[in-house]
Structures are given as C-alpha cells and as structure tokens.
Length: 208
Image 1 (spheres, helix red, strand yellow):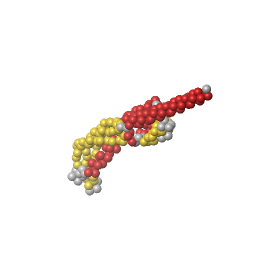
Image 2: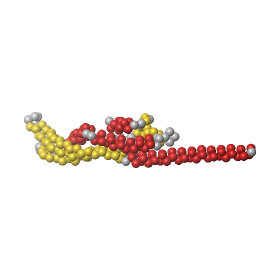
Image 3: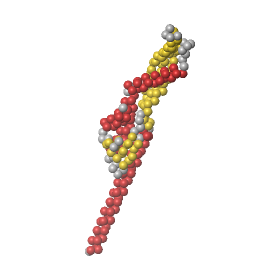
Image 4: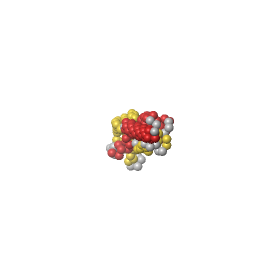
C-alpha cells in the first residue's frame, strides 16, 4: 500500500513538473513570437514618409548704383517667378528603440527630426541692367537666398507641417495599437504613451 501511495505521489509530481515546464515553454514561445511581431511592425513603419506641397513665389529684384555722387544712378531689375516643390519627411528607420521582454515594454528613445527640402525652379523675366551696373553672380545668389527665405516662411504658415505631423502619428499609432493588443506598453523618453492624444502631442513636439 505504501509503495502504491509513494508511486502515486511521484507520478503526480511528475505531471505537475511537466505541466509547469510546458506552461513556461509556451509562455516563453509566446513572448518570443510577440517580440518578433513587434520588431516586424517596427520595420514596416521604418520607411521614409513624405508630405509634398507646391508653392509659387513672384519676386521683384531691383538694385541701384550711384555714379558721380547722387547725380546719376545705374539701375538693374528683374522679375522672378519661382515654382517650388517642398517636402517634409521622416526617416523612421532611424528610430532608436529597445524591447524590454521581461517587462513587455517598447522603449522609444528618439525619433528623427523632420527633413524639410525645397526644390525651386527660377524663371527670370524683364531683366534689365545698366552698362555700369550689370547683373553678377552675387545678384543671382541674393535672389535665391531671398526667395528661399520667403518660401520657408510660406511653408511654416501652410498646412504642410501639420500634414506631416498627421502622417507621423498615423505610422506611430500602428505600433501603439499592436503593443496594446499584445499586452505591451509603449514608452517614449521614459514616459508611458497611454492614448492617441499623447501620440498627437508627440508629433506636435517633433514639429514645433
């Protein structure tokens, strides 16, 4: 009878140990699978997202050079029409992050700054210049600098940056939704991202 009881206890202990090991292996497998899935999603959003805009600038350039004091002036002028394509982009492949598999936390430490690029096409009309005050390379450089500065002001005042922000938040929300569905927590700069509004504020912070 005693042998039977000891045998039953050993058999029960073996079953419990086996079940415990099986459960542990299953949990480890699920954790590994979820980690791989999250890494794959991070790769999926690690693409360059771009917002494009078209701007037109009409610029009048004029310059006068005094000759013999203020008695005579040599003038030059030009009407410049500029068509420009502007883009705002994020290379999300440069996101710095790490996965804490023990605590099930996705820790994003930095997001790349937006890259603003302007590609202007200059067309010159009504270009006139005096013999004593001809157009030089520095005149064309001054025109380009002034036009580019004006275009940047237009970009700042347009909806281009807010559109880029929405694209950024849309990409990051995919990570947020996935992390929530799998019981993970998303952090940025050691702060828990617990809502879509926080992601929106994150986008605004990057563009301000």
